Image (tube, rainbow, N blue to C red; front, side, top):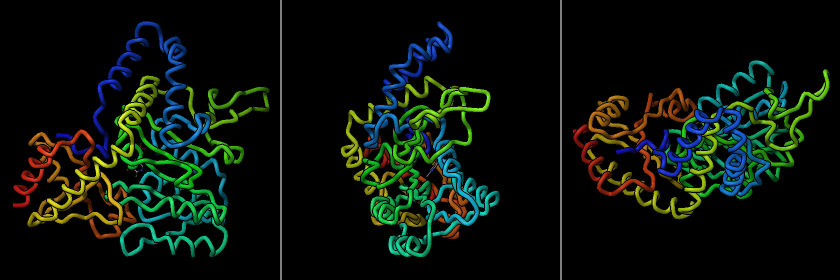
Amino acid sequence: MHLNHAGASLLPQPVLDAVLAHVELEARMGGYEAGEAAAPALARTHEAVATLIGARGDEIALVESATTGWGAALHAFGLTKGDRIVIGRAEYGSNAMTLLQLVHTTGCELVLVDDDEHGQVDLDALERTLADGPVALVSLVHVPTGNALVNPVAEAGRLCRAAGVPLIVDACQSVGQLPVEVDELGCDVLTASGRKFLRGPRGAGFLYVRSDLLPRLEPRTLDLHGASWVAPDRFDMLPNAGRFEQFDASIAGRIGLGVAVDHALGWGLPAIADRIRGLAEGLRARLSDLPGVVVRDAGLRRCAITTFTVEGVPPGEVQARLRAEGVNIGVSRASQAQLDIGHRGLDAVARASVHYVTTDDELDRFVGLVASIAG
Ligand SMILES: Cc1ncc(COP(=O)(O)O)c(C=O)c1O
């Protein structure tokens, strides 16, 4: 039973077939030659991702991981001493450490916008912060790593647009389980991994950069895919988001990502979100009723993730005992979300994440197993 779709989901058959077929092609005809033959499939991945999030194909860069894309975009803003970067409590550990590096090396400043009484980003506080002196960038996480809440990013995006401040959104945990649309969110940069709710292979994610922002952004790492060395002292970058891509990558992974996105589009994101909502709400309610189990989710709007703790049993042990029964869940730790999980005084929470493939029978069995661990 796989309840770790927020970690890495299960590949649907068409994704597995596409990945294996390309690896076989590489073995038979050579990596570069197979890569050339795969040009249409790679172009389809750009288009599929663009369709998924309401962007243009040339605004999409295929990257190895969400963190790689997020860090590349952040550094490309060329922020300097005194620049203020606004973040929320859901900021993910890898991104937070990249931000701290930037603070240490440039002297730019981090400003934390607190949560509201529902545990989601406080929009009034964000509005006040935007009015309280210049802000270079706002960074928000759509769905945190260890919490069911869906942050009100579209409302935050409207505030950022009104203030003329770029918004970077980490959509790792929302893409594939909810409709995510860049114009609706009002974001300028968005990152996601393919292996989570999109059900793509590991090692393939994407970075969206709004086209009118691109001329301002120069990636720190360039290679001969994203730029050309046109004279001994000069290079030209691609005019599109391709400047953020690297030449070498898992081509099979990128093809698989495109097939996974098409698979999700085939079901339809509103239908996926509906199905997931029912499953997750049911699970949350049943876990809340178990003696010794505390559901730890916040927010007004919730998604596929359910986080919980079991009295007297550390989350890592809950995970291990479930694994021994053939059940996969995740554990989210304070080191992944110091400003959220750490701030709430927790070391970790157990995280069960459903997807549209999850069945009621599985959840019946799951609740029974958690009850026996708690009992
Ligand atoms: C909210 C959030 N952001 C970013 C990441 C990092 O994604 P990746 O491992 O693809 O870099 C994760 C991974 O779990 C996440 O949950």
